[in-house]
Amino acid sequence: MAKRLNLPDDLHDQFQQLLKLAPDELQNNVDIQNTLSVYLKFGGEKLARHGLGIINKRYLEEKWQRAQEANVIDTEDSEIDASEDSEDSEIDASEDSEDSEIDASEDSEIDASEDSSNFPSRIPFK
Image 1 (spheres, rainbow, N blue to C red):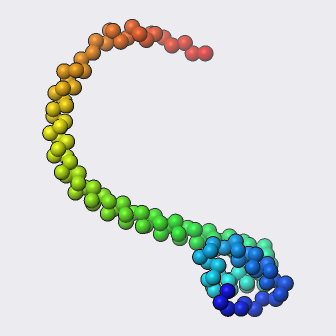
Image 2 (image 1 turned 30 degrees about the horizontal axis):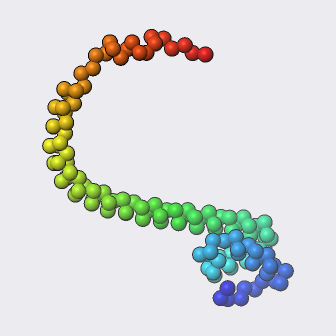
């Protein structure tokens, strides 16, 4: 704590305990410390805990949103790279697929009467 807050001695221990519940990045934030001390002075520990819960929730939401924005930017960059690579691979794949379609049509003729004899016509349910 860079600056000494004006807290009575009996609230100082509670303040330290509540401050430990805040994320590490916010524990040295003077605004958070002032807000927490005001909640503790005027509303007691219950209000301070409630306020700290809201602060934590907002912090985590902002952190999650920043991570999502960073992820969107990363995926946009990777999609651009992938589209450049896919143009080359589409040409190769189209040549290969023509050959495989011819082979598959010759091999795929199966007599359905042979396969149906292995399966019962009716499946009993219990």
